[in-house]
Image (cartoon, rainbow, N blue to C red; front, side, top):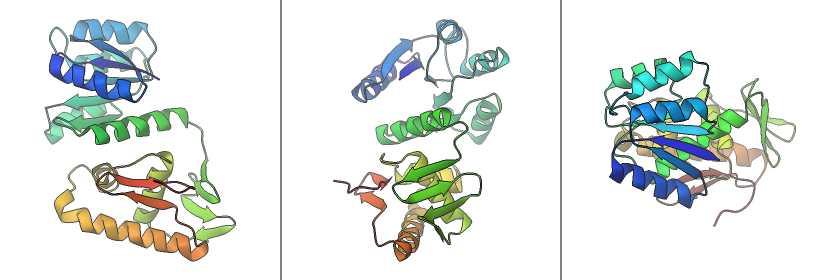
Length: 228
């Protein structure tokens, strides 16, 4: 997987390069907007990590230019501009996701995995995790031939974990995806745990097997096998 980083802060770009390279991504770094735009326009990448406040050409201009020229490379905006209006503007211009600085490496990687999974699962109608089947069209979950009776939020939790199957999804990432970026994680932390507990119970009522695993301090994993 090839990732382009467009970031003028050397410390941050070096940190990103280190984090992504450790995960075996191939990384290219551009330190100004104009060079970043040219590089993104003339090469194929699996993902672009884009800062907004850049010299020569800002991130909004890059987003607008790439989308206007039908460049559909997924773009994760990574910016210190954390106001709602900044996020809305970036998403309206074609960003696939928005993560505010400072960020946790685990959350960054989870967001990237989610974007890449969506990209490569275009046209996918079901996700299978052993006998557990998520029907993306019907918005339902089955184990074998039995439908699991889930609420809308419970289904969304299973669907998101299924898109990231066998990968750790942090509580922050899961919470923001299901309840929005304005989620008060400290107030909602136990609320998320309760939802996970309820989903587990419903799955295990149909088949006494653990599908959703907890990695203490890291997050949750949907997996058919045991998780260390």
